[in-house]
Amino acid sequence: MGFLLRAGGEYSNTPATNTFLDKNKPSYIGGMLEMANHRLYGFWNHLTEALRTGLPQNEARGGGVASFEALYSDPARLKSFLAAMTGVSHGANMAIASKFPWDRYRTFADVGAAQGDLAVQIALANPHLSGIGFDLAEVGPIFEEYVEKNGVADRVRFAAGSFLERPLSHADVILMGHILHDWGLAEKRMLIRKAYEAVPEGGALIVYEAIIDNDRSKNAFGLMMSLNMLIETAAGFDYTGADCQGWMKEAGFRETRVEHLVGPDSMVIGIR
Ligand SMILES: C[S@@+](CC[C@H](N)C(=O)[O-])C[C@H]1O[C@@H](n2cnc3c(N)ncnc32)[C@H](O)[C@@H]1O
Image (cartoon, rainbow, N blue to C red; front, side, top):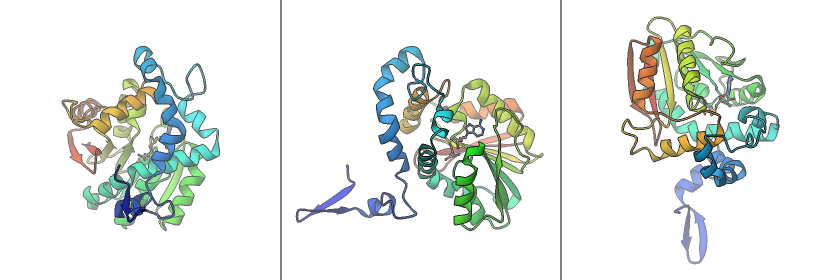
């Protein structure tokens, strides 16, 4: 698989493996592989059943507890999930922190912030900005530890709550990374509408994940992720840039565009 070099009967890491898959380095991004190993691998045995029934095949299978509640009831599993999110998102987070025209804005709120890597990368690259990481209360201590460790605790704070139940915190820019794909169409539209209500005129919503190409033929990672959402959630699915732009327009955003970030990830930007 290209992860190791073999020379004279000895194995060693490639430069990429050394950077990204050594757990002792801050650049480690293997959390997602750990989660695939511990959780997802077994669930995918039931892909056929998921396709036939449309029902989730994770911890919720056969009437168990729904995805996030099951995850968050076990502190070790919670931490490993949040670290997995950082691994999956780190490259895109750095791209968003540098590519978006942040000089036009002063505040941001990352909705479903997990460990907080997006908020940290934006704050590190843009010293004039301050922001909020919004997520379920259980995530708070893990978020705060990460923000503190990265030296931006004076500009990035945590806000606890459920985005299904309350309005979003007001900010110039609202971000949602790997959030919309967890939910069905009605919740996707509701979250985009809440983001519209939370930003001022000229403010922005940035939605990012493995946005599928409009003819649904090239972004294999995005298409596989959509199957993973079938296995992991009650109604979630991944979607194309055009789908998301359409939902943004419906909510009232006057201008929308899709920009590639890194690998399979793109961001969809809506300007109010
Ligand atoms: C798939 S993770 C994405 C994390 C991060 N944005 C990223 O891209 O790496 C989804 C996040 O949404 C959060 N979340 C789930 N349901 C939520 C709710 N009802 N209100 C607020 N946050 C929620 C989870 O705790 C988790 O951190």
